[in-house]
Length: 421
Image (tube, rainbow, N blue to C red):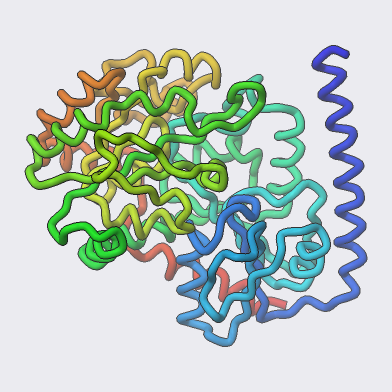
């Protein structure tokens, strides 16, 4: 059977399952919608109390303690505050609780076949805003027909998508297959990165038994799709970085004793059990299994990734950011276009992809290293004042909202929806 026929059979199977899903939702309409009930999910149930939903729910609870929250999880051992009821992320559980909830909050996509009722509101708080990797229809042939159907079904139910910039306004209609309203509030998870971060720095050092004056760099490689034999793998041309050399360079440039915090993507975290490197093991720790990356990120002193969108959020906090991607040409070829010209432009001034963003003109404020030698050089010549200037210009060029008030703004939106008939 050729690949096209196989794909069509797969799509037909998914459509049959979606029909069954819809039947479950319609049956659950015998239950009334509760005006004080909010349902929440992160990363298709793989996540827990983290990302944008966490900070919005915390703010809603602070302002409206009478509200009730249910949170869908694949792993029922995940921990939540007492005011949140965790429920299994199964078909009948979703059909029952979503059918009864006045407001839905999600940072990903709802399963194909999910149905919203009249009078309900669905807020998609997203799990990225600014991005390096193309998504949705911007991926061209890399965006499958099935992915398009799932996106279109989900986007048709959404009442508002959270964004933080003009970049998102121009990118997300095709990125999410979405033509509804945007809420330019900024990302709630970034509120902890604004202003004084000393409490978060103290917390992460106490948790891992580090000296109070320890310096920490987060290494957060991106999620790679299409791994060998169809298996999603953590170790996929990502860990060629020389950690001993990295620690030496950071110490030489910034002073102090440096430690490395590893953090893989939530889609890969359940299968990740740490990284072993005897040469630097005593100065490495892993936070891939923590539900909230952003409290951890707020405790960092620097950030390194290949293509993860969190590089932008670290930069907004004026944290030094370094890109390390020794496969950028191959990755760009395999995935399709990137939003930034990493494979074509000077590695110190990669510009925005003007074919996608003809009305924007901006350059990344951090360099891209292709090997360990370039990464070491980028760290040793890092200039704080020049970096701060470039970050400020970048935020202005893309119309970024970052002021620590995103959770408040979104809570007000949700409260308005809860008050509607």
